[in-house]
Image (cartoon, rainbow, N blue to C red; front, side, top):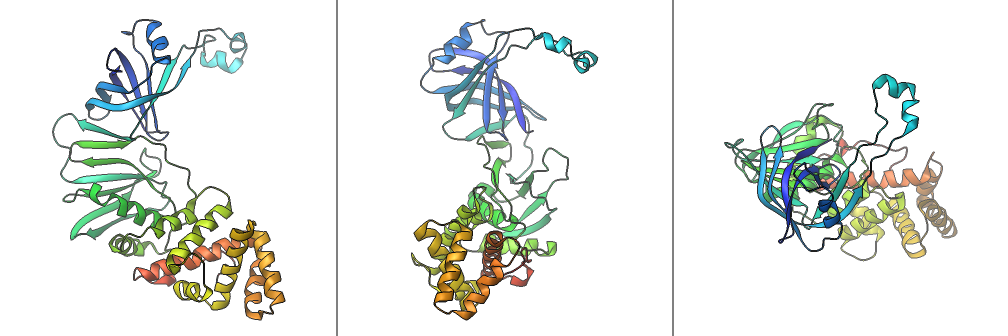
Length: 383
């Protein structure tokens, strides 16, 4: 768990109290609690009713080097927990508790959570400069080992993961000795999300001895798997994704890959992505066939399922069956063969989704000048 602990003085502009501070980065929480210097009782009761903006003065967080900020905020009061001491007699009757020396008296914890209006907290590192250049740590549980260097505006940027079991094993680090990577944060976020097939989330940005902490809980995300299967191709594809013009449509593809909501939500994002590719508010099978480089019959199935889901509010399986009925009535033999292969698969809904993601992934790799055959097949039937 990534936590930064320290002390500060919390103030609303008229009163201030010394407090203990915990930044729980992975849960996106800032917790404050009483210190021995805080007058008993008055602190907690006061902050339960406080309103207006709150600031942390003289914030000091301990780590390998001390992190500090003269004034951080503004924050607002979010929630509180006030506990009272009591004795649990069941604890003393528990053999394991006795063996471990667990006490039967509860610990009193008065805890207040405050949230920043902006999740980005600026901290300085005490002492000499950490190093030249800048770095970004993306929280994304990469699962694959990566270590390569790409060119960004003519300068080298190293991209690498950390060993499993370390505190940073859920992160990908991007480092440059010359560039201020914050200027490329959006591009790197999208390129890395597409390469990993899941939404990533930046937690830390460092420029020499200045560190910005993103104190917001990373959203849950699924993983569609790496965009390309060959590890030796990660560098080339990532570099080309970075250099390709940033397009809004890619956010929808990332959500199609990794949104943790039901399958239908991911597919709706995929359909919006296709609409961007088609530059229309409705899908045309000819355009879908051309942009995804698939047969017109496969594109016909995609468009029909999309229309059933959007216009009639159907789930994936129901939309597949309705589309099949329409194709059968219209005697569209070739398209019917495509949809029958999906319906005959072990999981038709998941296979339709997987086949569409496979086609979108191949089209994306092809669009940035890569070899689309590097995209591995993850489902039984693909378009």
